[in-house]
Image 1 (cartoon, rainbow, N blue to C red):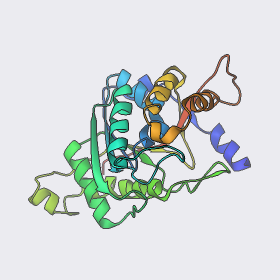
Image 2 (tube, rainbow, N blue to C red):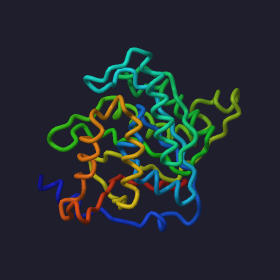
Image 3 (tube, rainbow, N blue to C red):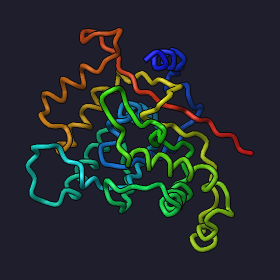
Length: 255
């Protein structure tokens, strides 16, 4: 706990409008529908409101994850795709790439790294957002899903060196004509050691509104809203709340 407090003290807060001098293309690569909204929905809303382009790449369609007691007889994948599309529009995101990996079985192998490298070279984002693969335990009451960690590891390995090195997966260049691409920054959500705090108080209601579209995940909507509204910082209260999202921001330099 002492280490946790010290880490938080060192976390810098930078106004989102001051982070970049011009509009960016941001690729959010995560495991499941609802991950972008839960992990960083407030920040995504700030990015799109500022004119940045945000694209989702989700490796699974979330067919294993459904709230206990949620009654649904159809294809869970179809439902979760629908929920994700509605949620993303709420945050100003209009493009989602779904890959066909099986929910619950993600492994950060070479095949996955190549698929993500393909996506990065094709979309050519300046910023990539993924999950911190080193964070096994979130707080003292939650184990980070192995899919979250797997996609984070594969994405980091795709960003460097695979996406920027023509000699790695050479068929992507020779057969697909996808040239090497240098990502400028990686933002790790659910970070073990955050170094950046984003104040998302002004977009917290947007985050909640987006998450309410994930009806298969949230349980009772009124209870969920109350829980989300109570997630303010410890030094604020419900009458004047402050909400934050935390990241490990890695700024990459070209060699």
